[in-house]
Length: 259
Ligand code: AVW
Image (tube, rainbow, N blue to C red; front, side):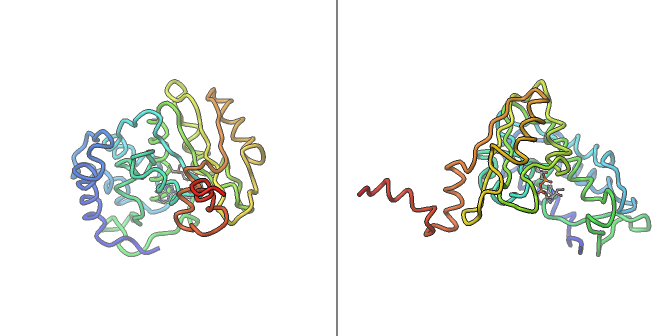
């Protein structure tokens, strides 16, 4: 894919927006200054070949940008990034990785390094499928791990139970590989699953079957409590905002105007 133009300016600008305005009173501040953080981010992959960049390269950035997470607020997602973010409400209800400074600075950007000068490729980057651990994939792996390590109390994961091609829980997803295994056993008490189904699609999996059974086993084997809810009301109401006239969304008016 083509790289993001003005990526340095975007990172610095996002950092000031994050710390001075958007998340100022939502989350604790990071220790590093914006210039310092941007510098650590670009140093991590510059002058490195774009494939096989290890997660360790991003560790100085992660350490400087890391924030303490409020208890019971961490929200992980698999396959439902947009819905999870709508529900999280910019940290108001829940905090996703992309609501933390680490995720916020880089979400949606395309970047990679190269061995030859100037050390960063300003036109194209390999796709995630082209190499084992590409620049931005190792970034998101390291970011996911850091986010999971910071979670405290109850943690929530939102996932999609309607996809025939892809189970709601997969051990090789980012959630399965870099988040669930890195939850702190002393800090986390339970894993609460929100299983969603698009309004017009059948439930291929529910909390009681399919990959959710495996998730329950993996969660309880780590010593956490497991809870799972199919289509909580709050999520139905969010989905209905985009599709208010369909049958599944008519319940509320029945209660308001009985008979
Ligand atoms: P998925 P996963 N921007 O929907 O559990 C771009 O299959 O695998 O669910 N790509 C990203 C981002 C991001 N901000 N974050 C992860 N990815 C990649 C981090 C990921 O590598 C969050 F905290 C995967 O290949 C979620 O709990 C692809 O997006 C969890 O990882 C689709 O993910 C979502 O990863």
